Amino acid sequence: MNNNSAASTWDAFCGYILNYAAANEDFVMVISDSLPGAEVFDTLPEEKLSKASSVSSLILGAAGYAIAGKKPWLISDSSVITAVGYGQIREALAIPSLPVKIVVSEGGLCRGQEGFSYNILEDVSLMRTLPHMNVFVPSDLPSFVETAETAERAQAPSYIRLSRTPLPTFTDEMGDSSVPRGARMLISETGVTICACGTMVSQALKAAGILEQQGIGAEVIDCYSVKPLPEQILLASVRRTGCCVVAEEQSRIGGLCGAVAECLCATYPVPVRFVAVDDYFVGSGMPEELREYHGLTWQEIVSAASQVWALRRR
Image: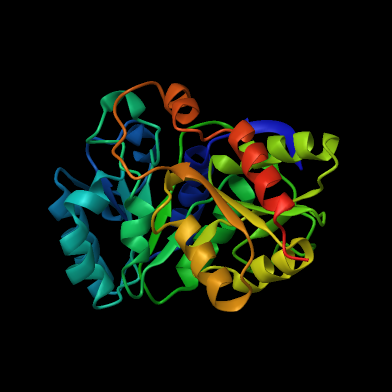
């Protein structure tokens, strides 16, 4: 379910991190000097803010702070850091398992008009393949806060993909939100499981409303932890419904779609459909136009849900 307030996960991050910085002496932010809106962090003390002009400087600078015992948050303006800096992320952060939080402010199709170079929809896949790396794609303020707290406890690097697209704040049906879970049940039904993350959660909820009118109850899971995957929550739902749709603003290869498919294939095989970007690069266009063109819509989720529901495991 959702309420009427709307804000981006980037807005959620900005509010959270300033309070976090004030409360943690060892905090340091390593930030791209090209980051739009970076002036919001100018209130940070000089010793807690380090600006860098290159991907290499961001990654190696954050690694150095972590080795020195600080709590570094690396802030990049786009997912380009995962493509250009993959080797250095692997060598400098993942292999030594340094607790650096990598935050991307405009993930997915947020910068769609800038074309192939910035529409990097394999970033979640790339980061998920790295041993030690945690991967999160929150959808709103509550899921971001839980993501940040989980990443802070982890003695390993974390990749957190944010969006500047305003989205509703959702409420869950699973009770105590203070218990780290990695996912939230937003609607609990028994017809079809819809597992989504990031911007696709709001589309999943719209689809659930249409499916209900068609007599198919949808169980909507906001799966903001892609790695580690909250397998018990997912499996409990799929055992009730017997089928699953996975929706993400990412390549269908290796991200949440891949994680869910791997889990279900190994544990409880059921019919599954993906609502994600097919295996090709995405050109330029306005974000909403690209989402519609590539089928990242509630209509595609309804279609996929109808297909798997007809084939559901009984």
